[in-house]
Image 1 (cartoon, rainbow, N blue to C red):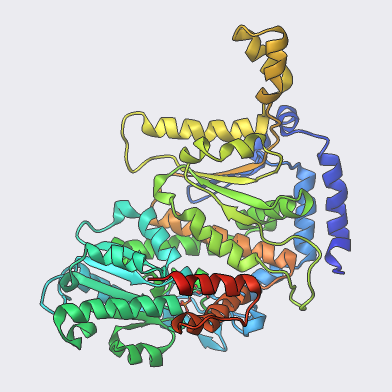
Image 2: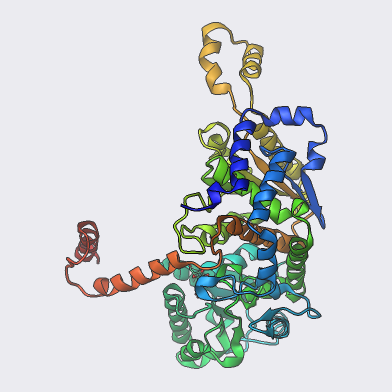
Length: 547
Ligand code: F6P
């Protein structure tokens, strides 16, 4: 049994939860007109309103006591200082060094890594500018018009999400595409529309051993070679981002076309490194550097701000409050910005691969909940599908609402309508609709008697459903950097409280092993009997019926 749930800070929160469950947010807002001022924070035009949470000043103090008890300050310092906090892999987690300015120093294994980081940034600048201004061309001398990033997980989701989020800053001459799935459909549908002579492939793989990525990379290579009739084009049309130079050269990629990164960069924390090459190609290096600057601003805020005014700390501790003291199992990310359509999927990997763990740092199986299921869709679309459950279902689903003050596409009343929906949803989730209010509403509609009573239960909303709102001036590269770093640090905060390592991913490695073992059985054409009856049955059905 862990000591965490018997610790003073945890027990104080358990007792406090019982008290606060007797109150409603409606009452809390009535009792304190300054609630918004008390429970909101701002950083460089990013506003976090966390007043619509089931908290009082005391809750916050108790949550921060838990953070202090867990020595959160020390862990933050250890991460920034390059200590090997990823203990199961004996690695530092130094994604913050990737956005450190040139005049600073960050040490990994006693070596200042900042000069290396900037050397690679220079490499990205030279390469991306040459492609963007058509001085670096394909095998037949034509300028590149399409970039295909082949990578999966952290080697895809970040660049995909950012390229979509920053589309207004994107090149009009260069398209970016992302192929991840080993399902050939992903590659085939992408290549269908492309011309090999104007297509540049980036093979993004930290390890350069990931089966999906290598399978796609070889098929892309075949597509190109088939067009040119020989291997010669490969050197000009393929670059790699990897830590594994031996494998990139085996694939046939010239060493000057390999963009380096380091084992202290975790896959899901890597969009700031050369893994961000497709971003730099698409939005230009100056904008990529604004993205890094925004992330660095959030790093500085996280590192230097007292816990009670610290955005990632507040966001992280609120998540702990609901996961561990209210039993919330899932958490919704609801961007009111179409450009953020891939943000929920990106955060899914960031949070679930980081904190979806059951063994603590001492190898003990924990007896408390850890990472929540992260999901979401842009508003207002989600309002017409799953919001029903958030409003009236039996489960608590805390949610983050994100919205820009100014749209990149000012079109009639669209943006006011969008934001009216965003604000109205968080208000409704907080207030709910009492039975008396629902009754009055029905009466005004002319209902009475049995008809009214029959409908009444369905018209009641419990309210008291917690949300955060993140408002930013405009979705620009700097803001995007701040937002992503905010969630990265939120993940660290929660991992510290749960005493788990947020930087390994053994569960995913297990999946890789299993598929590797089974593949040869599908390649032969013999019935198999070595698995459980379900797996044998599925394999044999597949073998018998495939054409
Ligand atoms: O999906 C598991 C994982 O290890 C991720 O953490 C990583 O981002 C992804 O695979 C891709 O790995 P690689 O960059 O080595 O191909």
